[in-house]
Figure 1 (cartoon, helix red, strand yellow):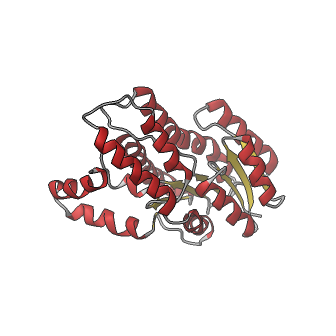
Figure 2 (figure 1 turned 120 degrees about the vertical axis):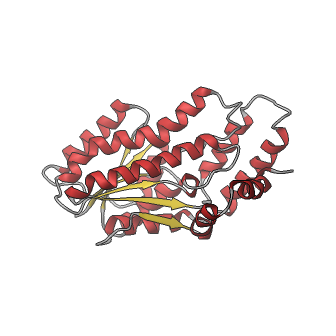
Figure 3 (figure 1 turned 60 degrees about the vertical axis):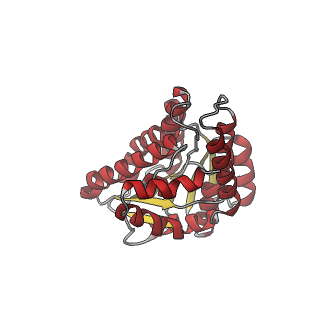
Length: 276
């Protein structure tokens, strides 16, 4: 039985992916941040899915997760590592607490690299054909104001995915980056909370209010997490997985257009997102 280790399985894209991989008959080691989310997922899945509480910002927690998976696999290898855990921190860079920037990078970047480093020996145990999947974002290719920390983390995933794809190719391990557009996921509702915690500032007040509404719209009207889970399934199970998977119309259209547009024209268009 193919075995997949994943993070971020407690909600949104991660929960949808765990459910989908379970229906496909894969063994899933599902990392969740909150134990309560793990209990909910456990009630929705078969015995092939085990939930594990893990904090991707805590090296000891990641080590314990990998050690548990290693012990449960025995001599078997791990088919894929799927890095989904993430959060969105919003706000003008001028006002953003440095600790918030650090948290954004710890969750969305450092945690992904740390888990993948530790899990790679288990993937190599399967021989050629292993998979590493990173869930990035259209926001790793296009940036708008008031989300600089989030964009920085997703741009980093693009670079890390590219480098690791080249480094692991000789071992027959494929690396894929999934790049969704706006998704209906709790991540954006949590990003609104980071805006609400910022100190009052007249210079940015109108733009923050408008951006808050755009985030709320994304959390309600974005594409379904199931669409992203479908793409992740392909990256995990296809004979020839792609290196990149844009998901949704926006992800397929906007980044190519951005590359063709002069900065001043793109900036003008992007301001409409955060204009009163």
